[in-house]
Amino acid sequence: MRRDQAEPGAWPVSGLAAVALAAAALHQLVLLVPVAVITLVPVALLNNRFFWIIGGIAFVFLAWLVQPSTPARTRTLSRAQAPRLYARVDAMTDAIGAPRLHAIALDAQLNAGALEEHRGVSLRPTRRVLFLGLPMLRLLDTAAAEAVIAHELGHFSRRHGRLGHWLYRTREAWADWSDRVSGDEQESSPWERAGANFASVFLPWFRRISEAHSRRCEFEADALAARWSSPQAAARALLLMELAAMRQDGDPEGLDLTALRSSAQPPSDWAERPARAMMTRPVAPEELSEAMRHRQPRGSHPPHRQRIEAMGVDARELDLSPASWRESAASSWLGDTWESLCAELGPWSAPVDRMSWAMAHAALAAVPATEWPAVAAGQNAGTAVVEEDERAVAASRSRRLQRLSMAAEAIEQGRVNAPSSIDAWRQEALAAALAVNPAIGQAWLVEVPVKKGQPVCGLVLRIDPREMESQGVNLDQATRSTALSTALLLPTDRDCWPRPSYTTEGLPPELQMRLEAMRRLKG
Image 1 (cartoon, helix red, strand yellow):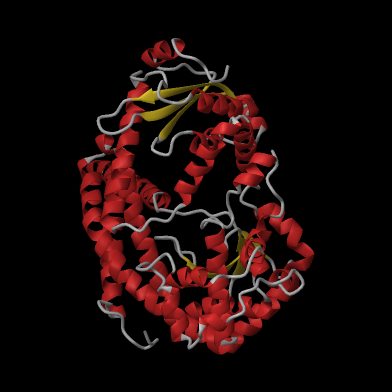
Image 2 (tube, helix red, strand yellow):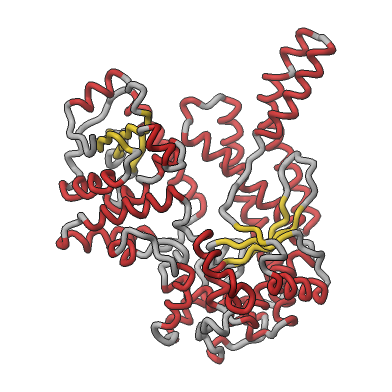
């Protein structure tokens, strides 16, 4: 596919922008009508100037509060902290003709990104942020890393973010609405369900036409990256990142079962994993062929084969060796601060994540050697990439959310059973994990019958507020610390719904009565 060749079915930018504007406006309508009913209808009945002012202020505040937001764990670098990186990016920005960045942010991804930050109805100006993943900077040499940065700056220079970010936020806003309603459909209002019904029809179609635009933008950014560095450097960066992710089962910054089983402390060299994975053996022709396919054939990025062919590169002639530390972009641009940045931004750096690691380590240590293959096989099944029809994926997700919603209601009503179908060794290993966390005072594993399919597992947790506060976590985080252990230990076909409460408060009578007849995993 040539870079100037229109993709079949792609919409013109003006038409796509009009659709996105209408969809975003409709989302704001369904979002703000309930806010208006709460704040302005009572004021209209009173029809008093003072109350109109108060109601208007309340409406504006709540309208800002309900806007969807997606926080991420990143580290924004100041110019003083990374002068060599900023100097190089500034020089590239001016040469390419892109607008100057407001910030460079680092994260734990084996990737990079260009973000124009907006926030719904906020009056704050747009900020241009370049995201660079620490594993990516360690994997690539400076020429390949500059090609990646040039690609991202190309999105800014071509103003892709103005529409692209809008398209993304519109998709995510409607997807979030649909997920929330699907997860609690019985408690949702007719207004909310009407919005979810619209999303179920609109999202698949809108995702197809917006992702066609995104793929077209990727070709334009690739062309600029190839002109800045070289086509070979741009193609090498693309394939190295894909191959490293493939060798780590698509989870380059996440879970290493061997390290998790061997140590209660998360590894400090997590950002080295992609480079280390590429050092183990040369790239085989079959592996290169699989990387060229790319695992997102109809997503926001074109298949790698099309991108590399558009740059005029023969992938078989590329040197796909990872950079040594001395040659890496990480050493050149962040050498003095590398270790501290890795400690701060690691996927296991937050208190709740360190506790989650320690609990999962205790769980795996308690797994009998004869049962270890079952745990490893379950983890591999969980990371496998499966290409399915978009509607089928959405329908499956909706059914799962409904099952979990029914399970949550059943737990509150005490309709739970002892986990008779869960192997004893799995329960013992889960008990070992819970013993590590002092914030969990009591815990029960239960089974919740639902109408279709396997029962849902329930984990009833009693959280000690003093121990929780001493760890620097909240109730949600203390509960989330159990997620990794349950994901590793429970059968892959079982969902698990956690039901937390403080030890200083009571449980529903029916649930308390049922739990008293069951074995406690802790307490």
